[in-house]
Image 1 (cartoon, rainbow, N blue to C red):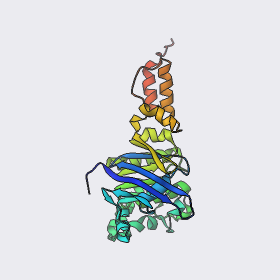
Image 2 (image 1 turned 45 degrees about the vertical axis):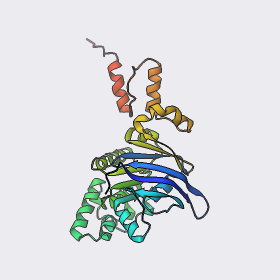
Image 3 (image 1 turned 180 degrees about the vertical axis):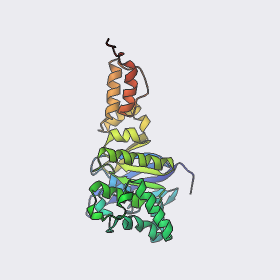
Image 4 (image 1 turned 45 degrees about the horizontal axis):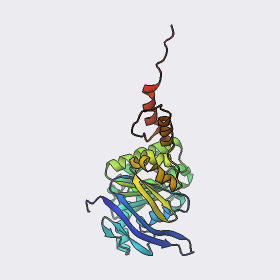
Amino acid sequence: MSTSAAIFDLQGVCYRYPDGPRGLHDCSLRLARGRRHALLGANGAGKTTLLQHLNGLLRPSAGQVLFDGAPLDASRAGLRALRQHVGLVFQNPEHQLFSAQVFEDVSFGPLNLGLDEATVRERVRAALADVGLSEQALAPVHQLSFGQKKRVCLAGVLAMQPQVLLLDEPMAGLDAPMQQALTDLLDGLVARGVTVLLSTHDIDFAYAWADHLHLMQAGRCTASLPATGLPDQAGVWRRLGQPLPRVLELHQALQRQGLLPETDPPRSHEALLGLLRPLAPPEIETP
């Protein structure tokens, strides 16, 4: 594989669904290898359509998608090879689950790679452990909660050991502890060199977590920037009709009031609290 910075490069991609709606229009986007990417945008902006182009489920009517510097091969063999490297987790787990038992579902992909039984079992064991479902390995899928089903889908993709992980609204339907566990898992994957792209409506999460932010509007990527660059691009972001992260707005307000010195903007509420703690008056000791 190439060592170039971009693992995916969309160049002027267009796509229209068979029933008429336009999914992508002259969409260009580059994804840096081994980084955290957040795909933002309203419903209908083209986020899911873009993800499905990266996994080869949809093919552009114009433009091209480059993976690792080469155009996607739309042949059966080419798509099979692509999906060994690029895994997609759908927003609705019912669209991705097709086996009656958790272990069977997660093992489907590795078995199709022609791996031996021992290797498949080890991959499934590791994937279920990663998503916190080791104890549910033999459970019937239909008995799982919505959040557990989403984690089974993720385990099925992780068992393929992809280079790129695509997730469509992965936090939807997960409670706070499960969201934190998923965040920790994604961070661990990026630390191992996996490129992660997830779609989300949550600008606060995206700003705190992602290395790069990408904004979809009407089938086009209208902005791509490092998350750390958002404070300097706040005016552009607002002109695109997007809200700023609340922590950034609060930080700016505190600075305008002279309550905070000039500092690099924090990216989480925990980091903002860390800036405020030294400014708090000392506690008064009572006799």
